[in-house]
Length: 412
Image 1 (cartoon, rainbow, N blue to C red):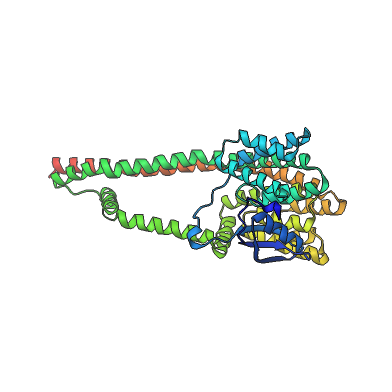
Image 2 (image 1 turned 135 degrees about the horizontal axis):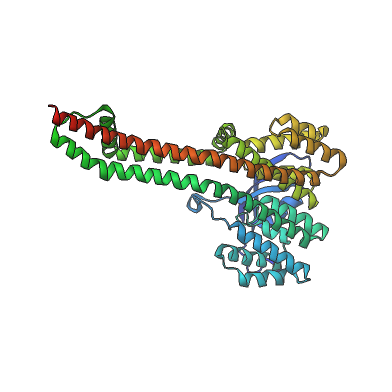
């Protein structure tokens, strides 16, 4: 076992989810020296790993796991594709890229990958050891690429996919920036008025012993309540936030939140379009790379990042393995609109599923852009109106009080 020289030879336990030879999803725990060794052991058992994570003790538990930024993964993938296309051995290419890598997390990952390659692991297995950088679909495509000898071409496709995914995420983020800024400014305005401006008026009103209008008294009572019970309000907000985080970390809670998300007006439509674009893009990329359809469906289900779609796609895969085809089960989920169902059907009948899915992904990408623009155009005026109502309410309350006091002083 010279290949393991210099490694930590203690066994670690790895929790996995994998697809067996019949296409069913299985779960279990595998003992191995490294994640790569566990991945290889599962392959030898006829299992295709979907997720593989080391079991941590309570002392090793991490609240949030760091991830390599997508731009760094994209740049690494594109650089590696260029080196391999130029005929440079993968080990040498990794060492050159390692010298130029600035991200500390990615640098540590590449160092470990070089060590794994020297120990005899394949590039895909070395990458599978680091899900914080390389997701399941990335590893699955790499495995097929190594079998077909088309690693450089597949790496270019992966880089292009990551680039398109980043652009889609960037559009969503950009669309949310303006409403977020306006919302923050409205909150800051309310806090300043409530804590610095209104208290001065309270002292002034009390000194005159004047009867205040209802709207003014309501505003002052609201401010007084916030100043007195701010700690209770903070506890409620923290409790809600903690409950939300806890729900997202549990499978049932995540499924509940995902169902609610898809039912929300406007937001649900945007979320569904984004999920459809990602599902079509990932499945197309995997099929084009030569990954078999059952495994592609399993990994695509996890890539959807939505429990509703994940369960539905897993059911589609199971029905497909029973001989019911793909287009029929897809239609029965009720989660795919007519255009997507048509492209699945045509792709299945003509044997051009990867091409049809690529067309579908481009279509839903354009749809997402259009819907984001439309949502932003509706959301921006709404935020401005809400902010105007809040500020106007404060202004009317103060002006009403001033006129009321003036009238009482001059007509006692």
